[in-house]
Length: 445
Image 1 (spheres, rainbow, N blue to C red):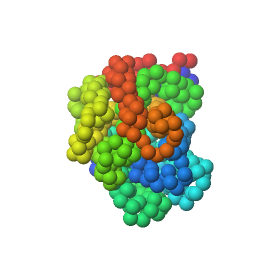
Image 2 (image 1 turned 135 degrees about the horizontal axis):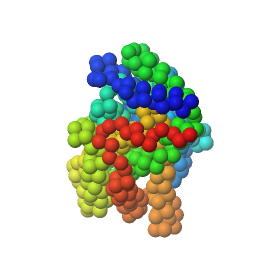
Image 3 (image 1 turned 120 degrees about the horizontal axis):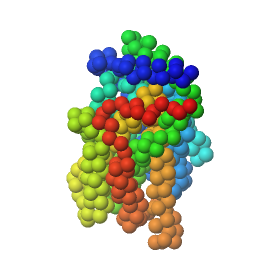
Image 4 (image 1 turned 180 degrees about the horizontal axis):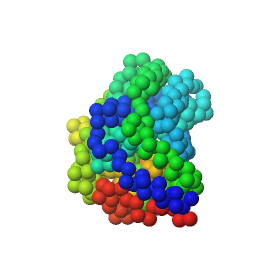
């Protein structure tokens, strides 16, 4: 068994991924990215309808954070399963099944009147989301050469950030034109259209790589479940990569996903539409920044320097947002955009972890990063609400929805602390120089 493992591992290491990206490669991966685009709408849509949800379900800030966090709790629980399934079964089938579950959860949430049922349907939506990024990265690693992975990861993130932008001002306008329940029904209908596109176009791998795919499946069966699990989940550097991405993702996950509109309307006297336009700049900034930082990282053949620079500049930007007095609409617009650009260095964490892991457990290794990110959102979204309510209670001795600037400044301290941790984490990460690392990857038997 050990001899067979080493023989097949050697065969896979010398078996090339595609030497260059083809027209078909771009079509398959970009169409598959519609899944990630759609999921990012679901992930962040609560920011646009937060006030409506608080009134509809008669809940305070902490409860709204709890409701939103069920999406991320489902992510964390099912990301573990997602990595296992994607390393062993058809990526296309997994995508279609997960997207169907997400569409169902979104549709049912639009009909819910019970807070408990709303939490369950939010959880259901999150189950589908657990598979979106991993599955597209899995496809990209089969359709693109290794030296293009940071660039293609940046473009995949760009698709997601475009979905995040759609969840802000466009969704706010839609919810105002109809109501939040009808808006979510339209959202679910759009998901069905994306399902049909993916069903028609996406394939697991290029036809000429069928034998490579079969060899990988044989190898992962020979390795065994628990050994492959140890190779991915018991590798400390994978978790460091995940924690970096988690900390850098906090502004998008918290301000873009839930609290941005409430923060801006309460602290800077802007309208709901203006607040959604400002918070959407986090997504636009990441949309612009992700492919650029991915290209820079691939070009200089290094991962750590861009990650460090992004964290340092992000720290300066978020301190300006929190503490600079009397920021205008234009200043906030630019600051949120630049924060999105600089925090987009988080995308480099994904290829770094993939390169620092054995190719046969790519999905499981990258799932460690996603578990860290979604776990962070599941923890910090309600924690942000808890800090708001706690500071308000200390100030007024009651809980309401009338937050002060001081309440938000207290909760916003999450961000500079996160960026400082990200800076420290960079020094604990390996420098892969954009190459797959195989040393010390064979399991001990």
